[in-house]
Length: 212
Image (tube, rainbow, N blue to C red; front, side, top):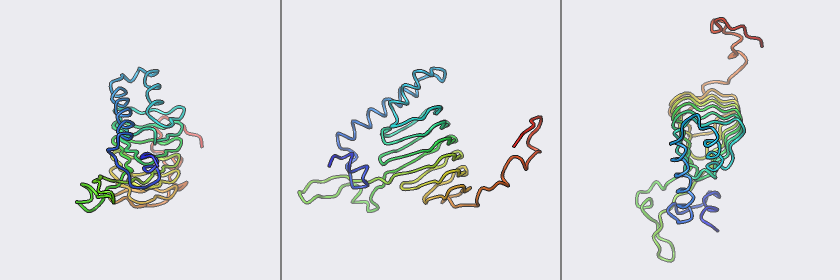
């Protein structure tokens, strides 16, 4: 089994393996090129994101700078908006649905490292080789989600459709659909309901006349 196949299967893999280093180098260089572009260089930016990500849906936009690890392991849906400093460490698979909005400094991580210090340095195989291993857990984010600034999504987490994650949250467990969740560690505060609609807050409308 190739090292990348192990990685995407949740098995132990060697992050320093030449095949993986080549994928990461390509993606890191593309991100560096993206981060050197001007915001109005729309055609160049569009071409770069298509090279960086495994999928990047129609109408999606990332402000930059961005730091993406593999790129090919991340699939982003339609009309996504990622604000400044989007970071995705996609050793494992990352999927993001349609119509999601991320505030500044959102980070998604998938790799997991051994808790035992000696095992983080190396583990000895039956052939006597010393290898440094880690493994990865996929992250799945539904559609119509809004993440506040500085949200961190940890390995193996699934966030359901229609969720709002409060600024600074560290999400260590699954969040069910249509939830407002916040905190460190992130916990569900309550369900998002019709009572949260702007129709009930005319004091915010100003000169706008809204129709629901």
